[in-house]
Length: 196
Image 1: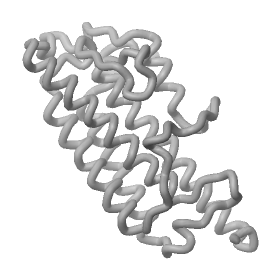
Image 2: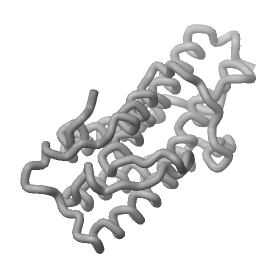
Image 3: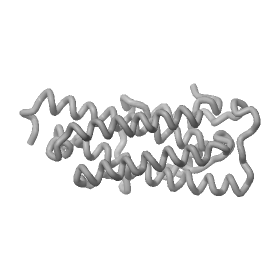
């Protein structure tokens, strides 16, 4: 269970965000527009919808993180000398773990994060831009105390997350939907007759 700031180490978060960026870019390069937009069934998202959802939700999360970081900097909440001393809180850690693939609990997407089935180039460009913004943001906030800086979840206001947990949630949520997109791709390649 991630209890300490080291669970959300900036260098590890940046490395994983870069890996995810490359993973999506490589997947997209191998896909034509039709396969990118193809749903495996009427109730399942396409690869494009999985990636578009990430671009949409990451924009909202990064806006919340930027606001919390600006407030924290104004309050002087810089990192303590012993970074491992900070505790993030069990509820936020549980939330981060709940976002990892495979999903244990399925829920609907919040309205502003529901994909609208945009063209592949637009979706990929937006996802990559948000991933680049995430990488920059982690670099910019690394001097802050990842355990003491807090923000409310943009989608579930009663849930307060540490800065580390908010960044960890984005990374875990990315992993979840990239895993979902790869599953869709495998299904479509295995059962091409299912395409409609």
